[in-house]
Image (cartoon, rainbow, N blue to C red):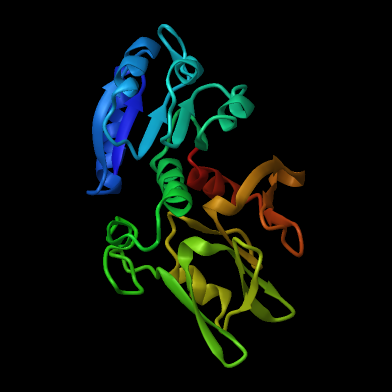
Length: 254
């Protein structure tokens, strides 16, 4: 994966490069650009770019000016300290909009989102990426990458990154997929908690284990609790207890 970084803060560039090295051997940073002018000049005759990591506030203007001067085909992950540019960013080739200080969990989730939406599942390079490093149903850290469910007499293998959340209802455990399907899963939630990758999944309470990508908003709630808005919409409110709230915030990247 060929990545271009557009960022004018040297420390932020070093941190980004470090996180990218940790996240995958298939990631190559082919250039770092620190201004609107330099970005326009490079992108006019750039080699093949798979993804751009772009700060918004640069020394000579906003990076949105780049789109006015050169046609950018590559998808973009915006990384900024400012929330007010969200709508403008998503009018461009935006994959995600991340706020500084950036955490590795957030960056990894954004890269997974890019791979799901822009990479063909038939490409061998994608299947040997840092998430799918071999044919096993387990990742290198021993956590499950796929979960086997049953629909009638048919068995269905669900990739972990296609799961929005696990939830219990009427004494049954279900997988809610990111496309909104409800699949009965013949396990207990405690078992699932020990099998999922803690980088991406969090045990919210006795009813829910959430995937990071499913979380839309988090609201302060009564008594120090948190209310989590997830997609697809769940059958009941997802509430994080006061005792679990600090761990949840830390998991989100606080």
